[in-house]
Image 1 (cartoon, rainbow, N blue to C red):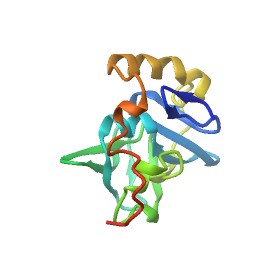
Image 2 (cartoon, rainbow, N blue to C red):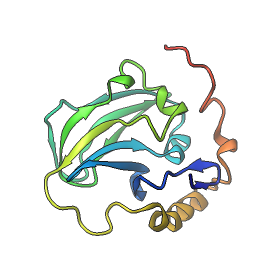
Image 3 (cartoon, rainbow, N blue to C red):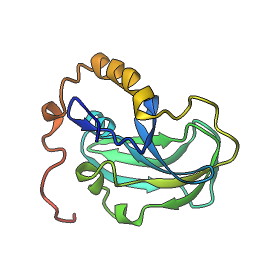
Length: 158
């Protein structure tokens, strides 16, 4: 699996660089969506995820849910027009699984409502140069610099 500065970026996923989201195709125009390990490191330890109601139709740039990391709550936005098909039940009531398994702990499944613009979701090879630029901007040298309390080994449910 490709790594960049200690963060995993699986080849089989697509990436939206600006939002730090990964997309796993599950069918024509359908995607499971999660936050990259780098995105979680920047946010701090993820505690809660609250999705919008299933069936909600969202314009590009609109939030499909809220993430809570410490004392910060921020929207997670779709980069394309979509319908919210499903939310990961494993993240209710706690989304801490995202901190331990960021490449597996998906947030939602979205159905694109129109064909995606070319270059919106990138393969790892295409996304890497842009992700490196963002890491440089944040002076992100290595995941180990951001790993406490992130990605802790405590598996207790809270």
